[in-house]
Image 1 (cartoon, rainbow, N blue to C red):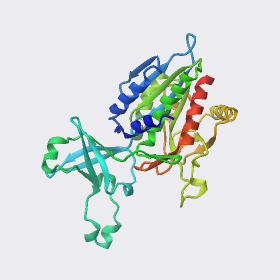
Image 2: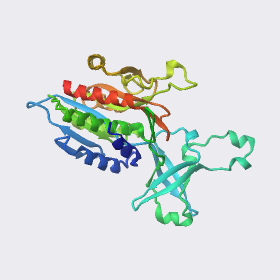
Image 3: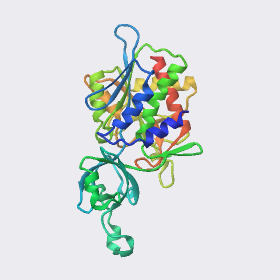
Image 4: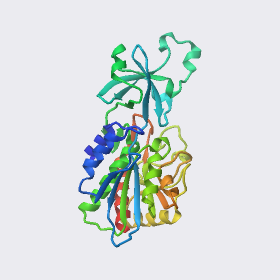
Length: 345
């Protein structure tokens, strides 16, 4: 497995509307894997492998590039940076975090904390208050000079290292850089093993998923595929304090064959087809349903006249934190099934 590529993808900053660094990395990695590479109006990267015949069916993988983060909304005269979230955060995970403020002239390391008093001088009532994400601020240590370095619209990401822990990988932004990795590595495996395909294959590395599947909507409308596959993370709540019925996936049990969430219901024919393919190839999998949330499969399903859609997902512990955790075996199973799906069409 190309773990080094996944590390670079995770550690490259890119929030909704600011995916350009991630896109540039993918463009370099995609050379030689596709017949055409272009960027659409909203910033999604559209990579195409030609099919056979005059009017081949279109198979589209949607892999969003953005990670949750913040945009700078204000810089105070004293140099404290106010932020506006782009993506969903649990504020309990934001206290005393190392962050990276990305500007047009350079990146600055900083710390994030909530407005208010430290524990030593808080009242009992103040300790009970949970701030909203937009009540956090960033300090890059430059004081009043910060106003000359950072401006409204610059962006902020968490600044935590990528780690391997046995069979696990821990990093910020595994949601959804694992899908970017899968979009590249499934096609690379297809190429290296000499598999052919009749369909036109489009891998869309989409923008702005975390704020409403925006890039997937425009990319899918432009492609109008016959089959769409949302490639993403999902929950793995196989951890203490969560009932088995709510765990969604079990880590190490294979890729997730995603059937339903708050945004879509998968095409049951595709579910059965992929399930049969996984059984035939001996690829570990598990059916998944997520009570809430959404992913790019919903956008492709509803674009233009619509398409048959399904999700291929990787169960992730501690999602939307700096300590997202996946199992390498699940990631490998997801790559295997995506390669097999493309080769079968």
